[in-house]
Image (cartoon, rainbow, N blue to C red):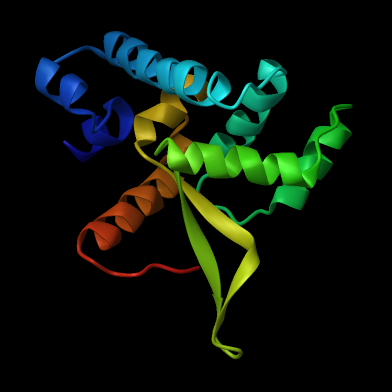
Length: 161
């Protein structure tokens, strides 16, 4: 059941519908496309959809890993693309407001303050990663961390890196 939950989704329509993997991913991809296309790109007048989509894929590929807006900007530069750090912050904020990703901030134990760099981001549902990137058994650990993050939040805990 855990394997099925990891791979197929926690979205009610998929869970209750008893779909095979291909159909489940098509439904999740439709949900993702609807949110990205209708909610984010139109609302914020994003002109370069390819660049925005590449940022989204970077985040999806790096679920459960620490990274910064600067790291994303540098990665895009290495691909011959240009995007300001401010634009990356905007993209991250818009994805959060659309409930596609959730930010987990870093906590400095010695200074006892919340840091603004090297945060982790988690996906609203693990199936979002698999419908975009395909299933990879090596990513299961990151998706388990994703599930634990949301379970801790559901139980009322504040979660930090």
